[in-house]
Image (cartoon, rainbow, N blue to C red; front, side, top):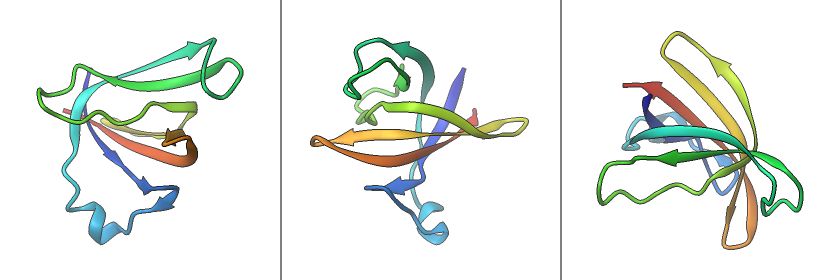
Length: 97
């Protein structure tokens, strides 16, 4: 299923609503699976984005994911992303295309 995906945080801090409206979404498939060898040092449920538009930068995967909200055509996935060896809280707003 294709989603328009927006990151809701930058380095763990929420992005302001007025700035979030200007963020271009990433379009792709969201895949959630169990990873036995995650960087968390233990098995972890991870979310990854697959089949994105050509020449689009991928988002880092989310670890220890949970679905924190769900509506008819959208959901929010929350977890931990690792950027340059540092773990940050992150949420993705995923809207069905």
